[in-house]
Image (cartoon, helix red, strand yellow):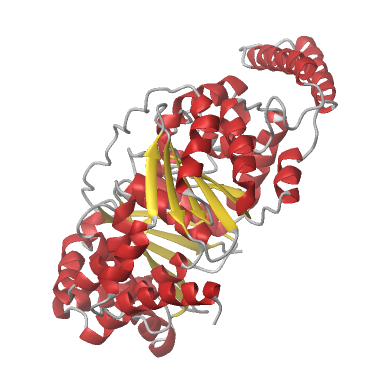
Length: 501
C-alpha cells in the first residue's frame, strides 16, 4: 500500500469507527479537528484552514453572511444579483481599458437615472422618454466594447479550477473554487481582487437575465408559484416570505447604486468567512491572506436582522390555480438550526417522509395509493432564523390533496401518540451519520461545512461534534418535538388546484 493510500485509509477508518460509536470514534474526530486552524485578519475577515495532504489539490469557499433574508421591500432579489455581478470582473479583469470604460459606465448610469425619473412621472414626456432610451441603448453598446467576456471564468479554468461556482439562498451567498494546491496564491490574488475592486459591468443586461430566470423558475412553473405563495402566507413579517429571486417589480427597478450600497454594507471583511481545505500549509495560507485580503478596508459588521416572525394564531391556507396535477405542501413553524430541538426534528422529518421506507411512502404511496410522490424536509426555506418543517405530497390520478392531508395527519398523530420505533430511529442515525461522513470525504464539501458551522452555528468545531449529537437523539425527543411543533394552529397548508376547462 502506498503512503498516500495508507493515509486515506486511516482517515476513513477513523470516520467509520466514529459512526459505529466505537471507542476510537472521538479520537478519530479529534484528530481531524486538530488539522483545522483559524485566524481572523485585522480587518475582520476570518480564515479557516484544514490540512488534507492526500492529493495536491485544495478547495476554497467564501461565505458571505447575506442572503435574501437581509433584503427589504424594493430590493428583493438583490443578493442574487450581486452573486451574478461577482463574475463580471474588476478594474483589471474583464475589461480592455478600465479608465475609458469607467467613464462610459458613469454616463450609462446617469442616462438610466434620467430615463427612470422621466418614466416615473405622472405624465411622462414620450418624446423625452424615447430620446433617453436611445441614449441609454447607445451607451450600453459603447460599454460592451470594453468587455472581455467571461475572463474570470477563463482565467480560473486555465489554472485547473474544477469547481468554480456560486449560489445564493435565503441565508447566505457563497463562492466556490477547487484548484491545484500550487495555485494558492493565484486564488488569493484573484479572489481578493473581486472583493476589493469589483466592477458591476453589464448590470442592466444581467438584471434582464435574472428577470428571465424568474419567469422560467416561478411565473411559468406551478410548483414555483405554489412555493412563492406558500412562503408569503406562512410568513407575514419575516423576510423568509419572499423568494430568493425577488419580485419582478423590484428586479425591474433595482439600480446600480442599490447594488453598490448593498455590497458596501454586506461584503465588508467582517461579514466574510473563508475556508481552505486541502494540500496547504496553514501558515502560508494566513501569510497570503494577510497580504491579499488584508488590503480590503475594514467595515462594521451589519446589524442583526430585527424582525422576528410573530406567533401564528391559527391555520393558514393558500391555493394556486394552474394547469397542473394537484400538489400539497404542509409546513409547521419551528425554531432555527441552533435550537436544541433541531436534531430531533431532523429525525422526525426523516422517519415520517424521507425515502421509500418512510411512513408517508408506506402509507400514501404503497398502501393507499393516494400519492405518487411524498417527501418531508426540516429547515425550510432557510435555517438561520426560525423556519418550517414541511411535508409534501403529489396525489395520484383521481386522488385529492384533501385525502393526502388526511393521511399525513394520521401518520403525524401516530408519532405523537405512539412515538417512533427503535428500528426507525436506528435507521435514521445510520443514514444521517453516513451522509455527513460522505460529505467529509470531499475537500469542497468540508470547506462548505466549516464555513457553515462557523457562521450559522457559531463555531466550526461543532461540525466534529455532530455525529455524537446525532447519536444522542432519543425516541422520546422525537415524540416530544412532534407534540410541541406539529399543531394545526401552527401550520400553513398550500395546494395547487388544477384548472378546470
